[in-house]
Length: 54
Image (cartoon, rainbow, N blue to C red):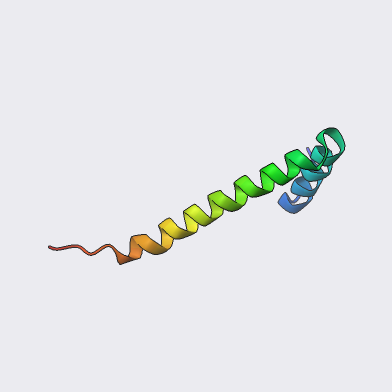
């Protein structure tokens, strides 16, 4: 079994998505990943502002 870096696999997957389904699905995937990244970043930043009243 060969080892492929994550970036190479991502590039291959994106190229395959464009060839099979056009740019619509690729754009949808990029937007979903971007929104999820923003939500996770906001959660990570905002959880530090939670105060404990012990």
